[in-house]
Length: 553
Image (cartoon, rainbow, N blue to C red; front, side, top):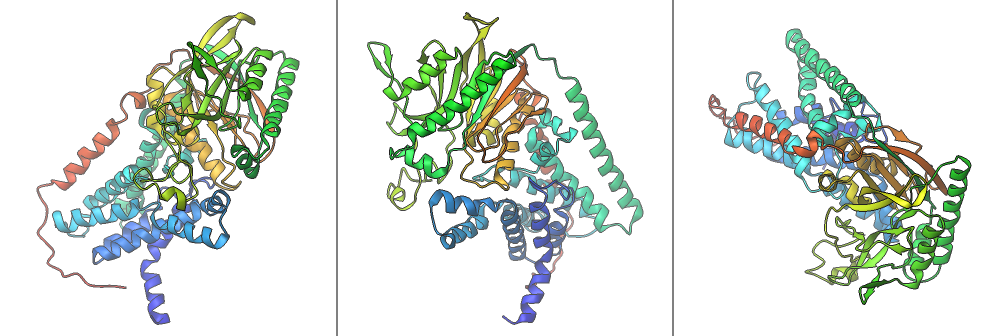
């Protein structure tokens, strides 16, 4: 291919590359500065495309660029977690970027098929509104339903920036806010592409501005109308910053186990001493995902639990401080005897609560290999765990000391969430429906570097606090540990890659009422489907254009 031909191809597909860059540089940890017009270049390109191949290539280029920019931490993770050379990691990263966000490709192809092949909808000024509605709906449906390893959407940066509009997630969720951003790109399209038609562009601009103002005012009103908390607790969150190699060696029994436990004990004791100086009672302590480097599942003998000897230090610690310890560790599933990523509760009464929670939503290529059950050889070729899945959303009861009398308890209902599960609103909804009063998330982000992923993962999980109006307690191995209250207020985030502990005073509501999004998560998409059907089955479709496909670069 000649240099001239390469140049022509680049300029031809440049709008798709621009969209990819705008989206990538508008996602966490960047402010969402271009979210409202990021799709305009790509949609303009699609509307000029002569065939489906151009639509496909444009969508693929856009998703590739946004993935390279927005998820460059995956390269570090492949190198760190897989212990692979940088050259191999780079090849794996290119493969990831090639399929991670194919929702843009699917959106373009579905729009092309519907408009060109099914509706025979000519691309003209007369039909421009119908095309924009179809483009926006195809884009948002593909975004919401394309299976991604790391579930993200365009709504989370609103929470990252703490804009009032994020409070509307109580009504439509962060997926709904993401959908709204995509729809508003349609108005931006009119403003940008039809600026010479002042009347049309002016109306679109006014509608765009009015929507933004209304949504932010609605968010402020929702936050102000929240019912006042009727209870309060004090939590000690511990972050020991255990290195990846240390954790791997401990998991394989090659040492470092006592060292890791001593680190958590020292930081916990420091936290208790500080709480004592502040005249505070610690209701529970949280250690992060897989913090305890021993298997602690109890075995039953004559209906009495028998704990592994390695569990005794944790039990003694809970007894000595007369509080409850919520700790991530390892176990073995009774259903298939596979290892489990486990959420344990060590109680001040001197035992470990029976039936610990086992992680349900496992991370692909980290805790299981897709289709590995059918092709076991994959586990010999790919360095990944083979964990058992848990039972799904559950609620655990944590006894809290009441009125400083160790024999007088009140029950707190928590929703245990382990790492990756926090990305899924449906999982937290299941726990909220079962009566969870707060969410407790145990996470290990030490494999992902200190640039983008810790911030992305943090706000993609904290979003559950606003959607279901329950405090969200997050404990990580290396940061960012944090608490978000039900009104979206964040409290004292931890530093990254530092030993740390934090004492949080957390107001909450007992038996909180369900949010609108909790009760009707399907309603917004039902409205979108109605709008989609109205466009697809419109009766005044014009006749076919009769123009032949022309191949372009």
